[in-house]
Figure 1 (cartoon, rainbow, N blue to C red):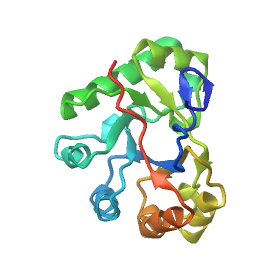
Figure 2: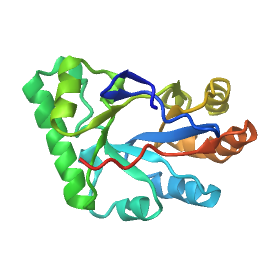
Figure 3: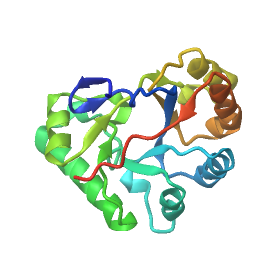
Figure 4: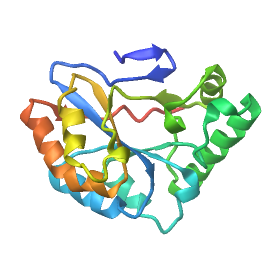
Amino acid sequence: MYDSIDQNVITSGEKGANKTVILTFDDGPGRVLPKLLDILKKEEVQAMFFWQSRLLYKERPWKRVLDEGHLIGTHSCKHPNLTKLSYAEQFEELEYSKLKIHEITGSPVTYFRPPFGQYNLDTIKVAKDLGLTTVMWRISSMDWELARHPEEILQNVIQNLENGAIILLHELQQTIQVLPDLIKKIRAEGYEFSLLPPLEK
């Protein structure tokens, strides 16, 4: 079973006989996405992407993301702090994002991660009303703060590994820089990589 804050918020993946973790990347699709996909393909790792729909254009390599077995969820449209919005405003933000991603990719959107990791009861209700499962994380790499110290991204993840952990990363240059080593170090600790299941709602 999944760890969760409640039945609508997932904080880690399934814990089976083999130790697994889930790589997730927020705030794309961005310019480093092709390099990121190249690394994941070379290392034979699948990941989850939580995208801001305002950054998604038909010209982005979204088809490659799906063709190579990754999952795409929504990270809202404009990345607001949802807790500062009303239920109606949150609904409009997430519905638009979900529909735009689906319209462009043709793939149903079933997973959602709130911007800044901030949410309230309205957020959870909106997500549920839109058929979205909210996904948080167990390990934060803090990569967005470590452009000058990318080696600390490795430490933040490796020192906190646990079975089923969802790992928070971003589509950033410093993350790309350390990602091959990060994958190797995670495997050296006896972990495999997995995904949340592609829910149909």
